[in-house]
Length: 136
Ligand code: CMP
Image 1 (cartoon, helix red, strand yellow):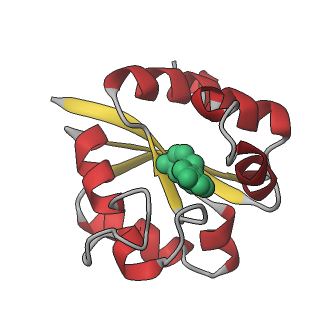
Image 2: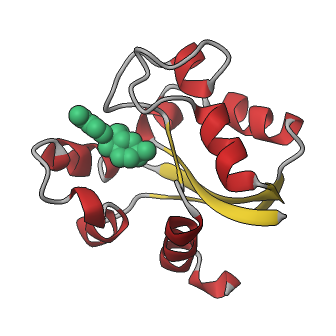
């Protein structure tokens, strides 16, 4: 079934010049880019996006990082896109992410892990409404 998922190409990827490489992987997989925007987000959007993490000890660092510089937000569409994109991204901790995944190939950090993608149908719905309300 065709699905949409929210992807963030995080500030570490933008500053390292990896946007093209990462987008190209999604395009080669034949996912459709439905929307895409580069923006620098404020802490209100960071807190809303990461609502489930705001009380965690690592969150202040994550908020500083995600608001520090431009990121690229995009909506990808395709058959089972939510699971497909999460597999392509690899495990959250890039140090143990499998080779062949974006994190496994291009990052060695647990926190600066290049990309974010919605992890379920429910989170995709919530995150798409938060980042791209005009698509609804
Ligand atoms: P993401 O997929 O965006 O979802 C939550 C983010 O929090 C995660 O990627 C990492 O960037 C970050 N994260 C998760 N766990 C930790 C941790 N233990 N320490 C630092 N950052 C973390």
